Image (cartoon, helix red, strand yellow):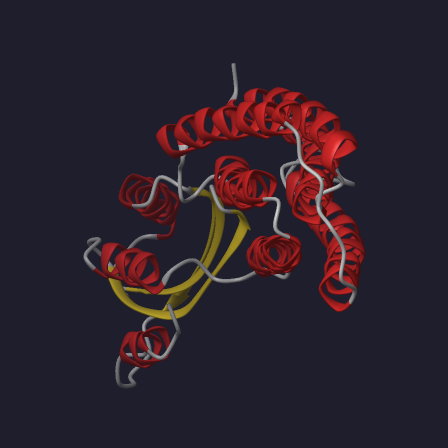
Length: 297
């Protein structure tokens, strides 16, 4: 079973236990954590829908690269709308608790429910850590969610156990801020992919060096690469070719360039090569190397 389905199931279970605990204690930290789990369930629901669409690899004139980017669209929508909305509610409620003196009631039943939710979140976090892949947006998003859920559950459990109004209010603020930060971090990551961010510079340099070492390649004038997804790259090249090569051999060289690039970087799925005759000018690839080295990590 994919980790996102496990995470969705665990979040539904913890949401139920936290709601039961909140009914007994009315802890604002637990309330913020309930909103966090509610947002996760909705967000993971969008993520599952996007995951189903992304597996439909069939391309067409309208969608030349299939539906692989649907995952980022649904994730960004859910993070932007749901994350901001739930943060606002939990943060405002937490501030209200801090500004008004009150007594936080607690019960053994609420403590048990909060403890069960904490144990389930710990289990979910361990599974997410074991399944994490830095280049897979699904497992990365699930990992961040599980970490936020784990720390949120610790804070909520502490508030319920101590039954201290001030601790509860501070806990609610902390959970709210954690929720906001995680939403911004994940949203920015997906945003970079959707606007066509270049792959990491180490991979760009590897692509360039791979092409330059291919026989009959004299220079590389242009190198453009974008991430269609974090696992699927498109590379466009303008390559200078030696003058003595025959026209009928260009197709062979083109195939070699494509195969060598894909062998060097497995995430490159699409390669477009344009050949031009060799120019009597200083090598252009040095300028490209300088531009790549200026890129931020």
